[in-house]
Image (cartoon, rainbow, N blue to C red; front, side, top):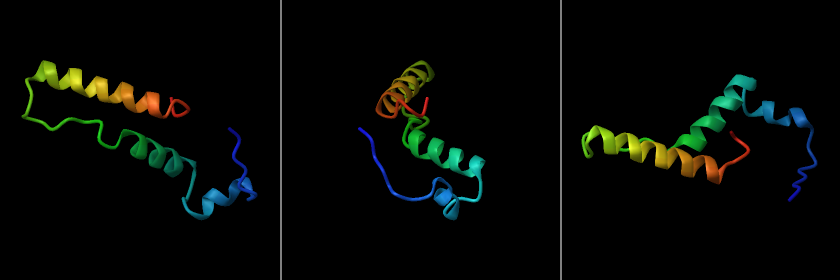
Length: 65
């Protein structure tokens, strides 16, 4: 699917100050909700849940990887 916005490629910088801020915002949005709550699971189960959530997030947003 191709999406055309009919704007200049640099228009994104009207909303973010630089490339690093743009990439940080993408990572923040992609990884939101990935970290399980601490103290609810044994540490082994916590890590398992973390990586399951991470994998699901990356599968939903494959172009981020």
